[in-house]
Image (tube, rainbow over all chains, first blue to last red; front, side, top):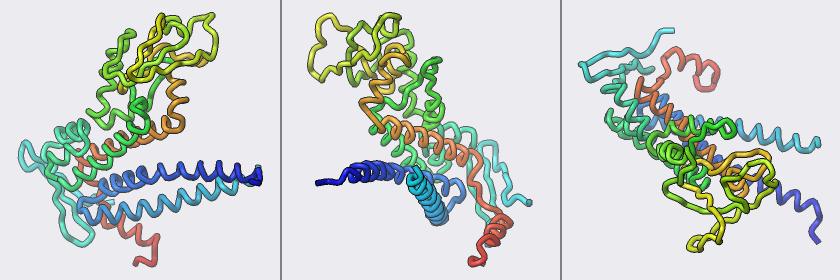
Length: 73
Length: 238
C-alpha cells in the first residue's frame, strides 16, 4: 500500500519538474545580457557562462530557502 | 571615472564608437545610422545588427528572442499575446511583449478588428456559452456558465451563438470577475501554460529592448577601472 505522504511527495516532484521551464529562459537571458556587455563572440560566451553560473547559484539558494521554509508549516 | 569609449562621426550616415580595451588595444564598433538601426532592431530582433553588419550578434539576438517568443506563443496556444486595455482586463504584459516588434503586431490588428464586437481574424477555436454572449455578464445571468468548445468540423448547435478565439485576439465577450468568462475559460484550459507562455513572451520583449539599446549605442564594455574593481572583489583572480 502506498503511504499517504507519497502523494505529497509526488505533487512536490511534479512542481519541481516545472522548474525546467526556466532553463531556456535562463540561457537566453544570459546570452543576451552577455552580448550587451561585449562585442567579441568569445567574450560574450564567457560572460554568459559566468552570468548563468551565478544565476543558477542564486536560484538554488532561493529554492533551498523555500524548500526548508516548507518544513516550518 | 574616466569613460573608456568615445564617439566619432565618420560621415553624415555613419557613427562609430571606439573603446579602449583593458589590454591597451582599441575596438571600433560601426553603428552606421544608430536611429535607423534601433528602429530595425525593434521591428525584427537582430535586424538592426544585420544592418550594422554585426552578424554574429544579430543571429544571437534573433535566435534567443524569437525562440523565447514563439515557444511562449506555442505553449500559450497564441492566447497569451493580446492587446486589451479595458478597465477590467488591462493587459500590461503586452507593453513588454510588443518589444519584440512585428511578431507581436497581429495583436494590435486583432484588437482593432474586435474592438466593436467584430469577429477576429484567423479563428483558432469556437465555443459557445449556455447563454447568448450578447447577454453575457448582464444582471440576472447565473454564475458559473459553462462554455462548450466546438470540436473542429462539427456544426454549432441550433439557437446558439458562438464566441470565436482568434490568433492573438483579446478574449471575446465581457470580462466579469463574478461570472465565467472567456479569459477564465482560457486559464482553465491552459492551466500553468498560460502563465509560462506569458512569461516567455514578456521576457522576449524585454530582452529585445536590451538588443535595441545595444544597436543604438553599442555594447556596455567595462572600463579598465571597472575591471580592476571587479578583480579586487575576487582576490584569487589577481
